[in-house]
Image (tube, rainbow over all chains, first blue to last red; front, side, top):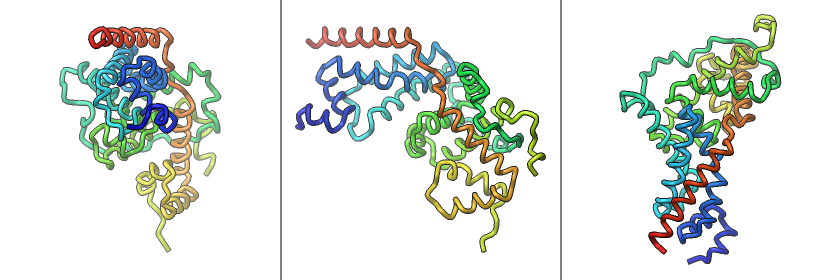
Length: 208
Length: 86
């Protein structure tokens, strides 16, 4: 077996996981501190609730701690955590509905959401028109308006920056399904944000 | 000569283009289309800005008290486990 010190130099997370397994509490705490922000953001984005997001955050790390032995060193620790967090968050969503079968595979593809309605030029740096607080509120509302099936894909791909393959894997979707949901999510967000970000007094015809 | 992408083809290719696909042929076709179709240029430009705005903001910063409660629960779990398996 490779001595822990050598491993630590080679791979931070893997070494911390190994130390945590051997009962070093500080090692696990370091992992928590490294990833708690990202897991909280993910949980809040998916569940759309402070209370649920906190539950998901705690459950994710407690489950990770209890199942450290089941962590396969061949995947990244962060991806493994995200998998636990996404499952916990989706469970919260399902619990909120009376029909427990829905979120991720809901809906028949009508193609409706791919439609483009708003054609208006935006400001060059549209976010600069608003305070940080206002921007958060605008973006949060836009994400929250997406159906969970699209929202989750957008969050994993464009906010948490997982690959298409990782996202497909995590959500048990095909790669084409991830791609088409991502496109619809992006286009729907674009539609919602246009109201806030379009250049004042303009319409596209001025440019034609 | 290849024919110009339709607006529908452009939408289908938009994701790959925004994700910086290495498919040079696809990139060229998308660029040709948006240079000639003002509406699709707007869709492209505003979708690109949508992603940029989301990437520039931490939507949900972790509240300090949420962090503290998390650490407290983790300490509790670790110390319980240590009592069980000294």
